[in-house]
Image 1 (tube, rainbow, N blue to C red):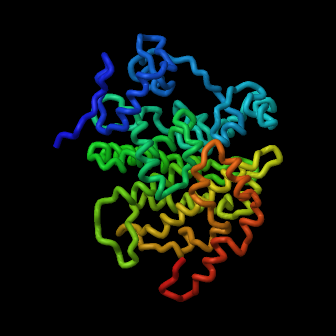
Image 2 (image 1 turned 180 degrees about the vertical axis):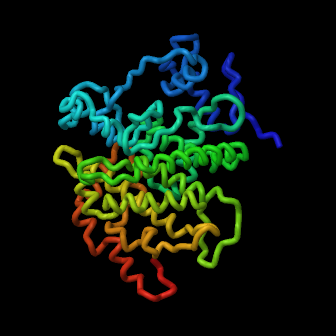
Length: 401
């Protein structure tokens, strides 16, 4: 069945889209000055990432001079903000913070990026990230396709149900390749287009294999968990691949425990991810607070860091409540020691989604709603684990946790 096509009427263009809103966004690029011109041909683009995509696929022997810092400082990297690479960098000077580039001039290889994926897989890849091919993820149809529609699909359809990636600080050019491709994979699937879903399945197979083959990188516990950054973007990408294995599985009857079957590979990844987080004590509010709280860090970044880990942990537990394994092993429940239980979540519930989705005005919102009193809002009596103990009774078949 032919789908309705929306074509651009701008002279000399002729681009077409399946959805009208995508055409509207494209048409706007003709109405505003181009921000980036290709130095190798007469093409112009409204966005730098589109220019880079064009050069990569049409001028294979050429390379753009990057305006971005080759190495970002620790503070900018942890906040996923642009770093100009100077020593000290401009953002750190504006915040009155000590810049790691000034302290060390060069960033230690093991901290070169807690989340970024190297452009080329090599033996020097950073310890906590997952190295994958720089090639674009497989897309439906022929030729390169803008991934923006699939990112938008992720945040409009998947994110409201699984809100553990912080949308206001999500920028295409800043995100690690592994997380970006994992989000694109989900976006491809939720479009419900047959070709897009097949591309998502192929991408999932490649990503899952990379995660498993490089598990020694992200499974290794930090020697000093309170002082070395947690690779939360890596963990988010792994969790997205586990979730994809559940939502993309072919229909089959539920077992008596009403759980979904998780393939053996993804089940191993799930257990490894849980154990790694346990070893870092990431399910404890006190550890979160100690990890993110520093004298020079603004309160808004502390709040964001704690919220992100809380939401990740709750999403991880939600998956544990859903899964079983196939015929190669016994079915397991979230109450068993290997999977994550509510009794391990030693922190209060995250703040409301409305605050989580606030962008540049977040600091003002937090001050207005007085949510920065961490001790008061995370008392042990309010911890999820405290409530879980009330709901759990040994030997009761109808345990709720």
